[in-house]
Amino acid sequence: MSQATQEAVREDGTIQRVSGPVVTATGLEAKMNDVVYVGDDGLMGEVIEIEGDLTTIQVYEETSDVAPGEPVENTGDPLTVDLGPGALDTIYDGVQRPLDVLQDQMDSAFLDRGVDAPGIDLEKHWDFSPTVEEGDEVGPGDVVGTVDETVSIEHKVLVPPDYEGGEVTDVGSGEFTVTETVVELSSGEEVQMRQEWPVRQQRPTVDKQTPDTPLVSGQRILDGLFPLAKGGTAAIPGPFGSGKTVTQQSLAKFSDADIVVYIGCGERGNEMTEVIDDFPELPDPQTGNPLMARTCLIANTSNMPVAARESCVYTGITIAEYYRDMGYDVALMADSTSRWAEAMREISSRLEEMPGEEGYPAYLAARLSQFYERAGYFENVNGTEGSISVIGAVSPPGGDFSEPVTQNTLRIVKTFWALDSDLAERRHFPAINWDDSYSLYRDQLDSWYEENVAEDYPELRQWAINVLDEESELQEIVQLVGKDALPEDQQLTLEVARYLREAWLQQNALHDVDRYCPPWKTYQILEAIRTFNDEAFEALDAGVPVDEIQSIDAAPRLNRIGTTEDDEAEAFIEEIQADVTEQLREKY
Image 1 (cartoon, one colour):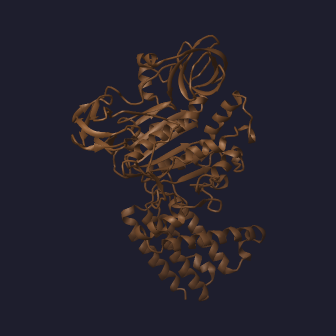
Image 2 (image 1 turned 120 degrees about the horizontal axis):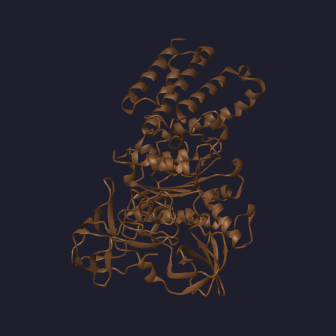
Image 3 (image 1 turned 180 degrees about the vertical axis):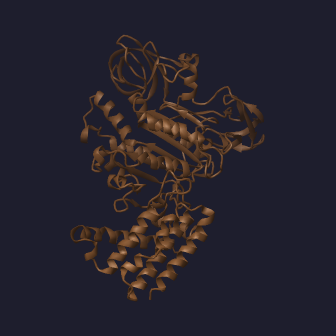
């Protein structure tokens, strides 16, 4: 424990019982959610149950060799995160310990128990530029200055939301550490660049508004069929190997959010290693700067202590709320909420609580709701507007969407991207099943697409949905009698649907061009397929056999649009449309 922590310690207790990450202590005067330090090694923990003289603690580190009779020390404060410049371009564990700092302390990739470090660098000097003057009135949440946190993000220094506010009596300018006072108020309060905030308490806002702007992901099936609003919630359930992590990483890399918070909650170590290695090397498609310049990573792999996994989503959402208070749009990826729920189940069983369905605690739905409800498009207390979009991956055992975590998540989120193992086996990626997925934001986002992409975009999208629905019905007949037994118009519908699947819905995450598709290109690819559809059915009505319609060499080039450079795509699409029209009309 640090000297500051030891000074903050108040009442002592004694360990009575140890059960994995759950420790019971006696003689500890504590409140619910107080942070305590357990055992001779000072392992960090949190009070989760109080019954008479017995206090139950979940410990965020491995508890082997911890024994009854060892001391427990209480800080009297809840689990908090450090908020301030330096949170971006950083990789944390589940309780906001910076992993690079701890690695330097240990001189090893394996961390000793009981090590600790502040969430942000307390010694680094930042160039503070004030935005207020002496005599100005400021209130909770108001911006008093700025700092260039990274090459991409201007960090806005805020009056803490739990301050009274008042008249500015003194304001600094120049180089400061995050613990030094930069603004003094007539109320006697001093504003530093560093804040602390309890992770389980939502930061205050004025109003939660209806979102009307999409979070552009660059994924055609998401932007085209199942859009997510900025400030919306989405779930990505799917079995092992269906592409949950790749889809989440694509969203983190290419979505048009200002800030990205990526939580690896209980994921395999090799996947998190890939994220940690890749993100610092990736250029930001929005600015060309390093992607990490607007990203905060929270790495809590499956071999890390289970209790820290339970807290990591709260750590992530609190950091997201802090940047939302500055007026930024934040995208939070939680991969995966199933591992979080499993951590709750393990701790609940050690507490001997009455289990609910499949052993999950009875409060599973409430915890999921509390997490997802912290997303939204908000009017902040300082008058700015900001959003948090939450995308949670779900890993149902065996791909069973009827299991409790998936079902409870479905009751909360408004966008559902269902991953399909059959599509993944056919190498169709993203393996999102267009029959099972949905978005309840579609109607409220239509006006944005009409204004920013094309007036007929909603109509064209509905046409694509109708064709895909018809194909699903026809496939049942094809499996019984074969494709050749269908009438020619239905055979042609299957051909159009094939181009929708292969040229529009399918996307290569590893291709330098195809991995990101801007909305205008998503629309134009669909428009080109619609042109083929209209001309083909006109030719069919004029008596041209379906085999001849399918034999034109212009149509297969539709599959190459996605991999065509953006600055060449528009001319390429126009050329395909002209060739399709010419070749089909020559036949009648």
